[in-house]
Length: 494
Image (cartoon, rainbow, N blue to C red):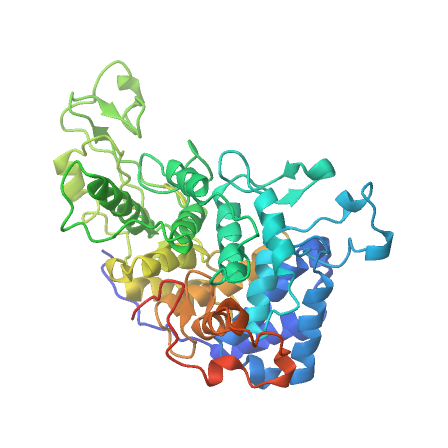
């Protein structure tokens, strides 16, 4: 550990974040962001969700403004089900033909963000074409259980086919099916094949990848765990009663592997110019290897034909944890001495990286932290060090968060508008997983406030009530007077 301790200056600048998000909502954005106009639904959803998390959405916007936001979202609704990402491809329903409809498709990501934005804005969703959207969603499912992004010419599935789109589909299904009353004749997705696809995407080292046989990634791990939970297929976390060799024990191992991988995403490598420290790993037969393949011991490449000298130890590089191979045993002497002896490693600031040997990044504070919150294991990570990383390293003086320490909330020469908004929102969401004062409680499964999720859950049409056609502008928001309703989504306990 570092020999000196820096004073804790981790202050959440709430007012600056409010000003930042109001600028995003109500003023023109830099022209560098123009190319992301097709992602406007995503950006709008992050913006209103951020103001909601900050607890000021209703104070800083008028009812008329919120109705305009809601009406714009419905302008993006597709006549055949789903939502567009923006209005730029809408050429009018009367001009739509079989030949030209492929130029104006509904998008599964746009549909997800439209629905959660409507929930945040406390719309009643009665204008959503539920039946058409659910039928469209079924047509997006691929033979392997995954989901595409759009339907192209002739109904061909295009794009997607990875765990991210599985998550988006699972949320859309959960939101729109509700209890399922009145939708018995609407075909459901193949839940079994979707579950199998997600579980097959788990990697040898414990995380979940983009698809089977891909590298584990924190964002994909989040999407996979959420998908299983929304489908009611998340294995039990408690393995104390599991009998070895049984299915329950296998399921328990699935979660334990995920937790082990997530906890090891903590990293003190905070800057891109730092290099991961390499520590030689020793297998049971005495050969020094890397992660699954033979390599020379770092700093001793001339011993390529055999193991390095017995007393050899690689020179550690500052700022990274020891990386262990999944199927190898670490030399006990190295494992016990390498990190503590490195005085240049400072554990006052710890971030999360998304993949092994990568630098920490603001957005993974949510991708990892949110997943741990779903699994009720947030206590396994260094709470204070992660909070200090966000507030002292990546929180920006004008509000918002940068991707890396010192970045503005969107380096326009490198990052796109999506990345700017994404890191600023997920920085807030990461803090909300740690119950930061000044932020509303977060529902990690939908990445919106708990109050927005509760608004969804109590909508009459989701519960099968007959009184479901009253417009949201004609009634008090339901979540202000309905309490104690049983949840249809797993509740994250404090």
